[in-house]
Structures are given as structure tokens and as C-alpha cells.
Amino acid sequence: MATTDLDRLLTAVVQGGVDFVVVGAAAAVLQGAPLGTLDLDIVHARTPDNVRRLKAVLDGLDAIYRHQHGRRLAARADILLGPGHNLFETRIGPLDALGALDGADFEALVPLSRWIDYDGRPVRVLGIETLIAMKRRAGRPKDLLAIPILERMLTMQPDDAP
Image (cartoon, rainbow, N blue to C red):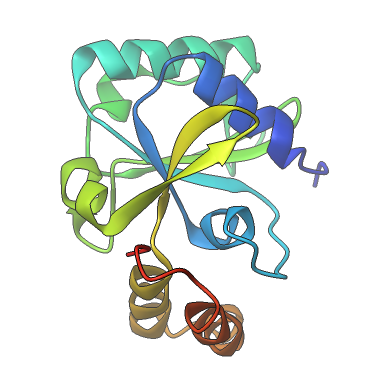
């Protein structure tokens, strides 16, 4: 598996003008969690204009769907418009563009997210409390191991964080 350059992946999506919420371990890392991640997970707005911008970013990163058994399938707008998980390998690491997460689409996640300053640009990240709840529901060993770290972060956040 290729190494991930989270900074370059996030910068590409931000500079591409994509409306999205960072979710998963990357959301925790961007809020200061001492965790590692192998990919960038985002839930994107599934509007035609936003999907067009996301597809342009993916094309610029030479993105292909992962786990396609030797086939090199590029991103497709019609699939990105749906609620499914689109798992890509790019030339700078894995990027997962999710139409929804845990049953929640972009619009449902916006009120559960917060803005952070990322290199002078605002980026939406899923709030720590919501990350904890989703990781509990997922119940995977890697998620369960992250929960105590995320719970500790809640005691260190300012009162205005979701």
C-alpha cells in the first residue's frame, strides 16, 4: 500500500472547492488526537456541481477505485452522486469519498461538525462527540481503541466545540 500524504490530499480537496466534512481518524487527527491514519475519509455534498469539483480533484490525483482486481477504474460522477462509499487510491495515498456515513449524508453531518483553520483555510471536521458515537456503533477493534483517546480530548476542548 502506498504511503499517505494527508496534508497534500486535504490541500487538493480544499483547493478544488469541494464541499465536504472530514470524518474518521483524519477528523480526530486534525483536531489534535494522537492517532494515526492511513487515508483521508470525507463525506461530500452530493450535488451535481460539487461532484463535478470532486471528480476534477480525483482526476487530478490519478484516482482509481481500490480493490478492483487489476482493473483501473477512474471516478465516475454518477456513482459519486450516490450514498455509497467510493474508496480510491491516488498517487499520494488513499482517499475515501463517502456519500453518507452511518446513515448520515453531508447535510446531516454539517451541524455535527466544526470548522478548523487548516493552513489558513477553513475545513469542516466531524466533532469529537460524534466521532466517539460512530466508533462505538462500528465496534471494530481499531475504533474501540481510539475511543478513550477521543474521550480524553473532550476534556481538553473549549466549550464552543460540538
